[in-house]
Image (tube, rainbow, N blue to C red; front, side, top):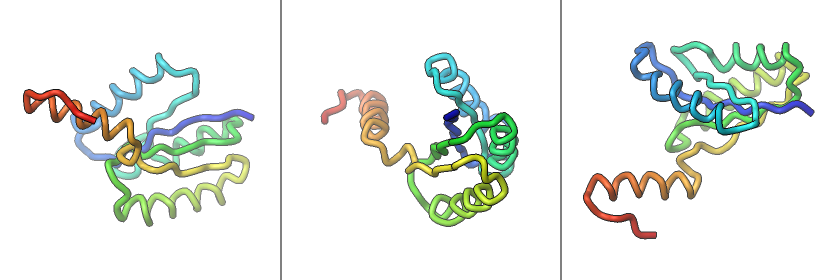
Length: 126
Protein backbone atom coordinates (compact mmCIF):
# COMPACT_ATOMS: atom_id res chain seq x y z
CA UNK A 1 0.00 0.00 0.00
CA UNK A 2 1.41 3.36 -0.97
CA UNK A 3 1.58 5.94 1.80
CA UNK A 4 2.33 9.65 2.15
CA UNK A 5 2.58 12.10 5.02
CA UNK A 6 1.07 15.56 4.63
CA UNK A 7 2.41 18.32 6.86
CA UNK A 8 -0.46 20.77 7.29
CA UNK A 9 0.17 24.40 8.18
CA UNK A 10 -2.47 27.09 8.59
CA UNK A 11 -1.51 29.24 5.61
CA UNK A 12 -0.97 32.93 5.02
CA UNK A 13 -0.95 35.28 2.05
CA UNK A 14 2.48 36.49 3.21
CA UNK A 15 5.27 34.47 1.55
CA UNK A 16 7.61 35.35 4.43
CA UNK A 17 5.28 33.51 6.80
CA UNK A 18 5.39 30.39 4.61
CA UNK A 19 9.20 30.33 4.30
CA UNK A 20 9.95 28.51 7.60
CA UNK A 21 7.42 25.78 6.79
CA UNK A 22 8.87 25.33 3.31
CA UNK A 23 12.40 25.18 4.72
CA UNK A 24 11.29 22.65 7.36
CA UNK A 25 9.61 20.42 4.75
CA UNK A 26 12.67 20.57 2.49
CA UNK A 27 14.95 19.62 5.39
CA UNK A 28 12.73 16.67 6.30
CA UNK A 29 12.47 15.43 2.73
CA UNK A 30 16.19 14.65 2.76
CA UNK A 31 15.97 12.85 6.12
CA UNK A 32 12.89 10.67 5.67
CA UNK A 33 12.13 7.85 3.29
CA UNK A 34 8.39 8.52 3.64
CA UNK A 35 6.97 10.66 0.82
CA UNK A 36 6.33 14.04 2.43
CA UNK A 37 4.11 16.87 1.21
CA UNK A 38 3.52 20.32 2.66
CA UNK A 39 -0.01 21.69 2.37
CA UNK A 40 -1.93 24.62 3.78
CA UNK A 41 -5.38 24.71 5.32
CA UNK A 42 -6.20 28.08 3.73
CA UNK A 43 -4.77 31.22 2.09
CA UNK A 44 -1.77 29.44 0.51
CA UNK A 45 -0.88 26.91 -2.13
CA UNK A 46 -0.55 24.05 -2.26
CA UNK A 47 -3.87 23.65 -0.49
CA UNK A 48 -4.85 20.50 1.33
CA UNK A 49 -7.39 19.88 -1.43
CA UNK A 50 -4.89 20.17 -4.29
CA UNK A 51 -2.34 18.05 -2.42
CA UNK A 52 -4.82 15.24 -1.78
CA UNK A 53 -6.02 15.37 -5.41
CA UNK A 54 -2.39 15.07 -6.59
CA UNK A 55 -1.75 12.11 -4.28
CA UNK A 56 -4.97 10.40 -5.33
CA UNK A 57 -4.06 10.86 -9.01
CA UNK A 58 -0.64 9.33 -8.26
CA UNK A 59 -2.28 6.23 -6.79
CA UNK A 60 -1.47 6.88 -3.14
CA UNK A 61 -3.84 4.74 -1.07
CA UNK A 62 -3.25 6.15 2.40
CA UNK A 63 -2.13 9.51 3.74
CA UNK A 64 -1.82 10.87 7.23
CA UNK A 65 -2.18 14.58 7.86
CA UNK A 66 0.09 15.95 10.57
CA UNK A 67 -0.99 19.46 11.62
CA UNK A 68 1.92 21.79 12.35
CA UNK A 69 -0.17 23.52 15.03
CA UNK A 70 0.58 23.95 18.73
CA UNK A 71 -2.94 23.01 19.81
CA UNK A 72 -6.28 21.74 18.53
CA UNK A 73 -8.41 24.86 18.39
CA UNK A 74 -11.48 25.46 16.25
CA UNK A 75 -9.61 24.82 13.01
CA UNK A 76 -8.49 21.34 14.11
CA UNK A 77 -11.73 20.48 15.90
CA UNK A 78 -14.10 21.59 13.11
CA UNK A 79 -12.63 23.08 9.95
CA UNK A 80 -9.92 20.56 9.09
CA UNK A 81 -12.00 17.48 10.02
CA UNK A 82 -14.69 18.87 7.69
CA UNK A 83 -12.11 19.27 4.92
CA UNK A 84 -10.84 15.72 5.50
CA UNK A 85 -14.36 14.29 5.43
CA UNK A 86 -15.11 16.07 2.14
CA UNK A 87 -11.79 14.92 0.67
CA UNK A 88 -12.41 11.30 1.71
CA UNK A 89 -15.75 11.51 -0.15
CA UNK A 90 -14.24 13.21 -3.20
CA UNK A 91 -11.30 10.78 -3.39
CA UNK A 92 -12.54 7.37 -2.16
CA UNK A 93 -9.35 5.65 -3.34
CA UNK A 94 -7.23 7.36 -0.70
CA UNK A 95 -7.76 6.87 3.02
CA UNK A 96 -7.00 10.10 4.90
CA UNK A 97 -6.30 10.22 8.63
CA UNK A 98 -5.96 13.41 10.64
CA UNK A 99 -3.32 13.08 13.36
CA UNK A 100 -3.11 15.14 16.57
CA UNK A 101 -1.17 18.41 16.19
CA UNK A 102 2.59 18.35 16.73
CA UNK A 103 2.14 20.57 19.78
CA UNK A 104 0.60 17.65 21.65
CA UNK A 105 3.59 15.35 21.09
CA UNK A 106 5.86 15.00 24.17
CA UNK A 107 9.01 15.35 22.03
CA UNK A 108 7.74 18.68 20.68
CA UNK A 109 7.09 19.95 24.19
CA UNK A 110 10.63 18.93 25.23
CA UNK A 111 12.20 20.56 22.18
CA UNK A 112 10.28 23.77 22.73
CA UNK A 113 11.19 23.77 26.44
CA UNK A 114 14.87 23.45 25.48
CA UNK A 115 14.63 26.45 23.15
CA UNK A 116 12.90 28.56 25.81
CA UNK A 117 15.45 27.52 28.46
CA UNK A 118 18.32 28.35 26.11
CA UNK A 119 16.86 31.81 25.47
CA UNK A 120 16.53 32.30 29.22
CA UNK A 121 20.15 31.29 29.70
CA UNK A 122 19.26 28.07 31.51
CA UNK A 123 19.40 24.40 30.71
CA UNK A 124 16.11 22.58 30.24
CA UNK A 125 15.04 20.28 33.08
CA UNK A 126 12.76 17.32 32.51
